[in-house]
Image (cartoon, rainbow, N blue to C red; front, side):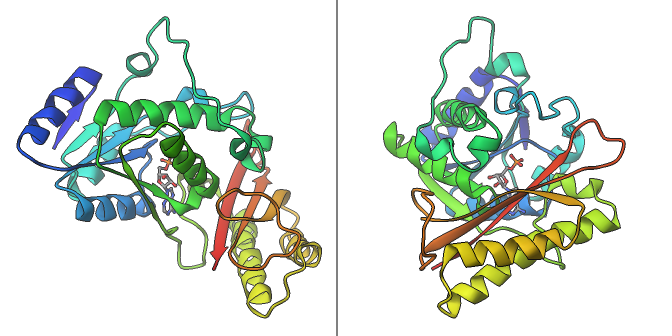
Length: 286
Ligand code: AMP
């Protein structure tokens, strides 16, 4: 497995692969890898001949409220995980390889990027779409794999690929969870027992919504009330939003008849930490 730091290095290797008739897959990440990322690598490896993992903590998707400096970085550990997951290349550029001086062109995501997460984190999806467009252009993969964990991100990326006619197949892998239902995340390590218990409440609320919807109880206002009271039983979390929406457009639905995606986000105040921790989760009911 090779680690590349430059755009030209990636291009050289990928074009050799292509000349040999090999297909290429890309899994973009920000590092701090865990079993959720590995599920994406496994899926991608099955779909193509060569697997590229990008590891880049993208500054343009962090807002002033997010702690970019505190994002965990451990390239050696991540390289070892990529190697044992069968990756052929890690692309780990420095920020100035991706955003050299003079950089000034960005993607502006439309309505799909402005509600839910986009409302809580203005500009976040513009940063995501810009860096993903760059990565897809640099690696030019046949397939790129993303996690359902970041549901709205997956919708934004599908839109990006369609709107810009990018010749890549996008594949979404279901969320990998811990035994108690908590979605795997590098942020879970920061949780103490009571905030961890509260965090699992997000998934309990999603499951409650699924059970109700499966029984035909689809009135959004009533579902929202039930989910809120479940999450707020435990005071550690501030609920940010719950959305019951169309899985393709993310428009809110008055009646949560399937197909529907339930999105949830909450903020956890951690004593002593400079910034609150946000948790997001979702469930799709078809
Ligand atoms: P990140 O490194 O957080 O930017 O995530 C990189 C990719 O891994 C994204 O496509 C995420 O949706 C995906 N991902 C993160 N956590 C999980 C998880 N628990 N299960 C499945 N995919 C995940």
